[in-house]
Length: 208
Ligand code: B1M
Figure 1: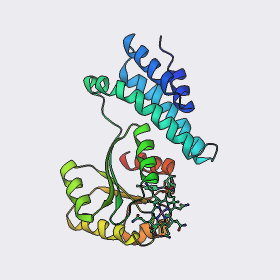
Figure 2: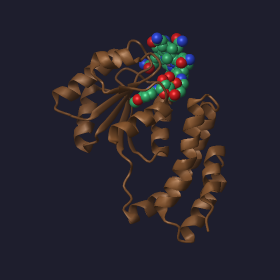
Figure 3: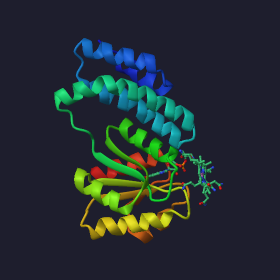
Figure 4: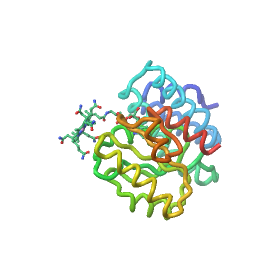
């Protein structure tokens, strides 16, 4: 019987080799892909997210854990697809126009994937028009924007307006060092998250 607790521990420790090995062994012996995902990988990333929120671990540990999860996911994804396992939700994310910072945005994307979301990452310097185009093309109900510069924050407001003008009814979450809850309220975003773990909580709340 595959030890999914050991798989969760491997993710927490960022031990790629062990995470991949247990994932392969679990699938070979017939453990359901959904169980490997939920009781192993997501359980492990959930612990990392909680520790990150409490400042018990920091960005490097989160990145290492996310990488271990990613390696295991590469093995698991075809099996999940075969079994018809649906993601918890879908999330479209990008850094706004004029802004090239992506470390925080990538962390948010990784933590969302760790929580079972399918993430479409548009990258950096994304114009309001591109957000609208991609939101319409993918039909994704949750859109996240990141900005690290006070000078690029207004692009968030323009993007929220463009999405609403285009009739996109997706929920919009914003974040990034200079962004605040007050700013989210002002521009009509549905939510603000101060860090990657809070972004996951917010996304879960919005799809619930
Ligand atoms: Co830039 N930079 N930078 N920079 N840079 C800052 C942001 C700055 C505060 C530095 C400073 O002056 N002290 C300053 C902004 C000042 C301001 O506007 N108030 C600044 C500046 C001025 C600039 C340039 C203009 C510098 C220049 O060229 N003169 C230039 C702008 C380029 C551009 O974007 N057009 C620039 C360039 C760069 C680099 C390319 C060199 C590099 C970016 C590399 C990259 O991202 N690939 C860089 C870096 C690394 C930084 C600092 C040092 C670190 C940012 C970072 O990655 N933090 C930063 C100073 C600092 O913060 N100490 C600085 C770690 C990251 C994990 O945190 O992104 O806040 P953060 O993400 C957090 C939360 O905010 C939240 O979750 C994350 C994890 O908990 N979060 C979200 C983020 N996005 C979210 C989205 C959500 C929810 C939560 O929902 C969707």
